[in-house]
Image (cartoon, rainbow, N blue to C red; front, side, top):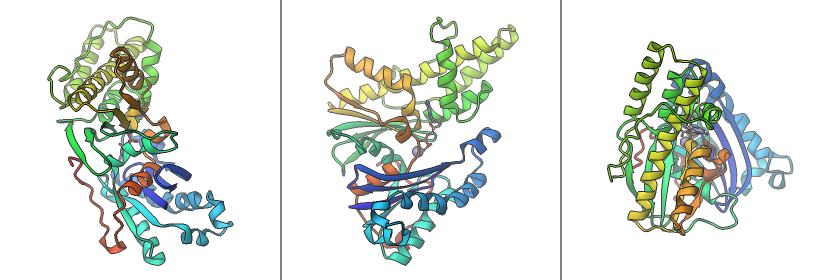
Length: 348
Ligand code: KG4
Ligand code: ZN
């Protein structure tokens, strides 16, 4: 089954062609991150305008890269497509509508059905792409993105149970907001990771909290960390110790705090539900320190748990995992049944 998938929920415009949910035949992506870096964060109206600018060129690029189907004629491509997959939520309404209305227009003209996709659950399906062996069930899935920190129990492709999430800020949001406090660029996660590496050989004099790490629950709360960072910056400034070295130290501690909590809670979920695998998804899963900690902890516990994390390019937003999710949750609808759902439930 060949799926043309489209993603436009936030600041990436992406299209992919996916075979049987596991093979990326082609993929194209445009990002408006550089524009948001200038404003220090995402302005929804700006993101939507960028989506509009990029959507057709990106789809065209993905289609042209499937030359074996097209003989260089993009129109003939559509006779090989079984379904169109599109993100319907959660996300920014203006941005979502661009991908959705484009998918609906293609569907209206070609009569190809549309499979609606939940962006957050789909993030986990990056673990099914381009792999020699596929993840095994039951699995615990951790989705850590700009707006979400969610833990799921995946019994199989059709039974997902939401186990816990954040009470306030998401992990990615915490990286972004604390980076901004430190004067680092957007997106904050990669910027903090770069700063933290500069510090790694020194011992940290700054100590930040690990919010809710010992709560014994699968709930997160990261807003206190942001407040602690603000307080620490104030104290360092008052002591005239706020400099490049202490900024790197802060970045290091922020990364340590967030990754400690994410690892602890996910391993707790895995233990509680006796799963065979742990799978990660979302932009924060691209964090090298996070994956190193997971691997070390699992290795040290002598557990046989199969730990999976997609390559960084598949952790951050793209359309390939949208196509993979759609293949495994193949419930096609007619174009007029598809609507944007910016607040689509993630607690399934
Ligand atoms: O999944 P994603 O690309 O978009 C959303 O659906 O939100 O995630 C974006 C988030 C941002 O908050 C960004 O700072 C974070 O992922 N991120 C990272 C890294 N790369 C992206 N956080 C930590 N380390 C990284 N290497
Ligand atoms: Zn995402």
